[in-house]
Image (cartoon, rainbow, N blue to C red; front, side, top):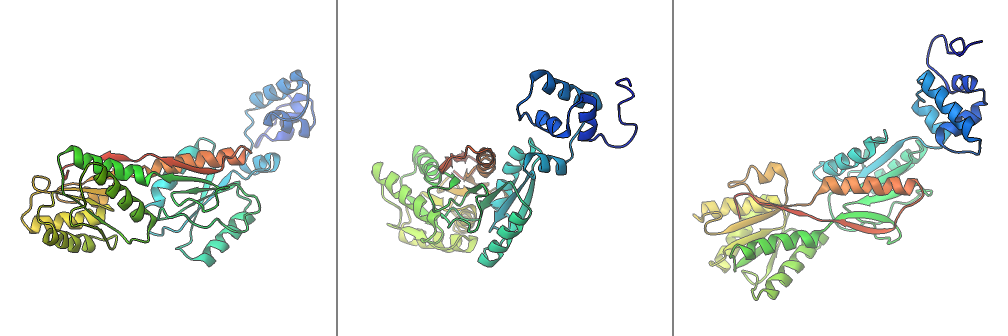
Length: 339
């Protein structure tokens, strides 16, 4: 029988076909194609040549059975709107796509019961790993009942230092904003942010006060203005600051919604932006930042990169070389017309 005679006559080429052509068992063919097992170099080469000659492509089910993997990863998020989880997901998919790994998205809507349900569902589907993300940068408790499934926390780091987490550098982002305002000659800078109990608001406020103090300045209005992550709060806060400190020449805002609200009030009060008062936001949310008048200078949290690095950390963990602790991803300042 010639080599041509031994080619499959029809249908999909199987691992058994490769084994027959190479003159080895199916098990040996499997090990050779996965790069594992002990065998003579010429045997491995014969299997690889047979697979190439037959244009053998293992299906995903076969890869799972042979390699002990399902080539799927779960992504659990608490961010139902997708404002933060979507960029993280896209970054993760960019990193995972090269390995032909599928991502199963699970939205818990911030509900603990849903979260437990999705963990059990993903475990039942034998995912190779899990990425956990959310809409806040506050540390979160680790998932329960994982049964040693590799897990990485993105944006919202785990409270367990033994876990692997990837987070945006909140303090570094605040530093970029404040130093930009100081460098542009602003000396009376107000800080308007979200709820004081949110880790992001607390960290950014603390660093803002510290940086201004080191430069010899104080917060305009004498305090941090904590409130909601909303345009409405930005509008109210701007009026409060202008009454308390009419000489305010800049606002550093905790997010772009607040910054857009501040800019609206300044315009209504006849204050030019940035001629009279500069405004800097946070998040670089295009819907807000580009629609503001004028378009906002803002801090980009680099969420795509957070997702990409989280996926790479997960691949390392799946391969048995995971690294515990928190990796921080630098932010960047996007300069537009407001400051």
